Image (cartoon, rainbow, N blue to C red; front, top):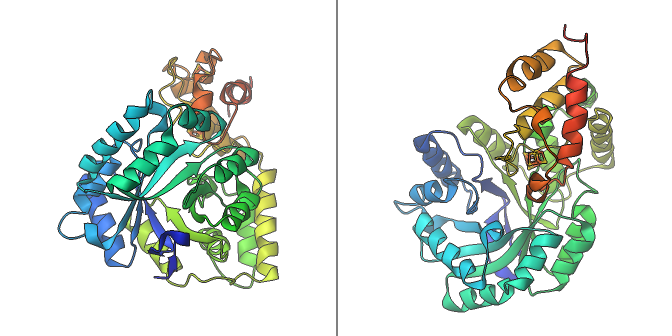
Length: 374
Ligand code: SF4
Ligand code: SF4
């Protein structure tokens, strides 16, 4: 495992960080997976208050001497903050869930323009400084899903140590993007990368042309390898998070990261990445990562499932299976896109900034084209 200094924090962290958002369903398997990662050199674990049981399971996995082998990063649930005192209330709950007396890296979760206004309104920055003084947290930062101007504004507003941003070969110019990464590095912030495979979207929506590109390229690597390699090549990137759901995925990630190094991408490799990006873009699918932050919709619309069917339908060039699933299962169950009333409640939760109600209308139309069922 390769290690790197985490900016100005003084911490030496593994370049592979275990994302604890997509744990296996069984708690026993999740604990075994965390411990396998730690036993194989991973010392950075990323969780959040909002990731269902993740903090509790992570806390259990870190019993029996594992706590002292890792740095825990977790995040303040900005969605739930209604007054200044809430920040510390939720932090105390997180410490209890994780079974620890301090959080190594504490991030304000999912900042964007609106959440940043909320942080300012409830004085979240003073909260961070107070918690540092009390020793409840050791380092401070923020995770981000928003526009580049908002990102720069937040970077400039406080003495942050760490930022966590979404970056992958498809999102070079989305959200903070490459420009944001370099901007933050120039201000001395360490960068943690999330969604290196765009939340699994890239693996579930691979156009045939991408396989052709990979097969024709002289250096034989999988798509996952190229995605990680593109990131760990960059000196501005400290830790790359991967939220593995099975031990097999974890083992494959560890294999890839055991050869991680800076500046390994040749000009030809970068050209390959460009072609892969173009192939994905020509597929015209919806960039939903299935994070499920938009669920539950008050009307019961199965938003991520509908987008998954649509993307699969795009990939399969309008195959009857996905349309049939939509018509025969989702619509009769009352969770189809036709139930959307455009209330826009889901919009504030989508880190990918998808215009969900507009997309739902388009998807419903395309998946219910008359006379195109078989
Ligand atoms: S806009 Fe549509 S999908 Fe979104 S919360 Fe409202 S009803 Fe549900
Ligand atoms: S629509 Fe947005 S919030 Fe909902 S699952 Fe997809 S990416 Fe996540």
